[in-house]
Length: 244
Image (cartoon, rainbow, N blue to C red; front, side):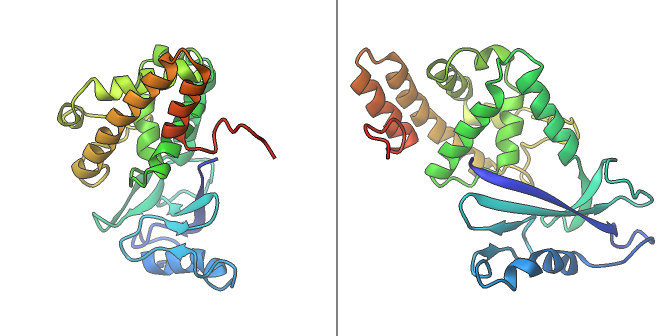
């Protein structure tokens, strides 16, 4: 498990909509975070400010809490969109967390990815975290969702190199020139307010190195060589010689 994403749907309507409580964005975030900031175990691990989209808890696994509110006139938690705060635009916008999760599950279980889609997401998130990149989980999910199903077929030694090759076979600038919509088709993630060009370029550069390592691992004829390359990519905790 790489991280835990929590959508905290507050029983409030979008501030300024004229119905329900008119709490500000900061009041909502402070209230959601209060049980953690007031707890001695977690108060030093809570991360958010007036430019944050979510509340981060630096524990293992990492937890991200996204405070959201109802759209004006709706009080049914099963109905989306809800409204989330975009600090870069300083406004509340539509969000589709439940629908997004349903699309992720569909591509994993109902399409032709052989149930390898979600595991592949976890691999990319693991590499993101291992190498200290700032790519957010949502964007990685959207990126992989756009890939053809056949790239996910086979075992990890097959589909991991194939997925990385699909990324690196196209230049970073050509990728960023595309319109890459979310699974819900509600917006493009290759825009400065979502996945910035600088962040994407850094992620793409790392994918180039990861692909070379994955190919060496998958094509190695000796088991020890394969393990060494996979450990170089994934970390020494993988394929240990001894298990406690």
